[in-house]
Image (cartoon, rainbow, N blue to C red; front, top):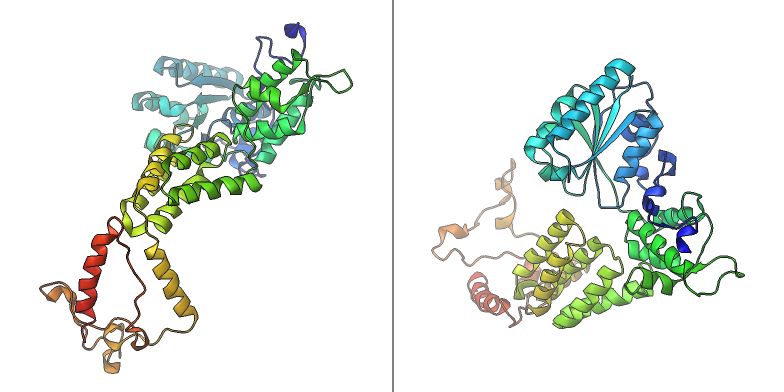
Length: 447
């Protein structure tokens, strides 16, 4: 029976928990926080408490190692470790931890690390209850949050703690986590063969989340143990791409974030939005999201699209694209797919114009070819000593003094007085711009 085989979940502790590192040396990723002398390393190595450990707030996406770091610190330093979740804990639980921590310190000289997961779920009053213990050193608080602490953690607690930002794990980091889980006695104990394509699929599926990777691996191992898939010499079940796909109940897309599929899909996405096919645009957006594409990459492409292909035809497009990027950064994934969808629908259905950036490229080409000329004297800076003697600023007409707010005046160099870079289209808002621009040019460049 499956339940009798070691290395399977069997209703016991999940693989992601069993494989949690016991020291900072085993932590995958977050190298920027684990350099010699860094706050986390110092906290873990200070076994005597003489260094005056500082409380920290760990901010990062799910599955990047916030709980792992807290537990590794406690184990490495020999401190007492207490874990609370802000989802279920309250002020009474916090006060109880404080009392027990004070007793451990006073009677046994043992300091306490309080790991508080999802601190953003604590109300202001609940967070206030932590302040005395943090300020007096009764506890060393290691708090974790997936939301921006500037908005979710009270200022007094922020000022008494170090804010450390965790990064999404790279594919290489996830590979290390998966490989260790396959061979480690705490994990699958080398009882399974992980097919290379299945390994790559699990990493893509995880999208930077170690917990998700280990959960998929565990589901695959359970499915492989009861399947009839050929084994390596008939001794060990093989975890294949097909098994992982069935185990996690979703198709594993062929999508290499550094290969052809990555570039093909983003190219198709851009061209679909540019071509105003909203359904195709959403399809390629869904493929990128499901394949674990970095949402920051998607946001950057959406922002570029808003200016490059829509521009002045719909000036709101850029604002919506930037707002979507901010929203994704603030709420994270998977909820971030919602503002992404809104932005993509807006961009795909918006009128299109590339006139603004084409105009700039034409101006840049002239500058690179030496078509510059001198700035007209009325437009030159007249604020420094001697400028007026040189005629700088002389004859400048202040537009706000005119009833129309615009008047005849030469702005470009002499060599470029007849150049027209911007040629607005008749699409969307740019139609109004076109009519207004014709009137402006007629007034400004009147001979």
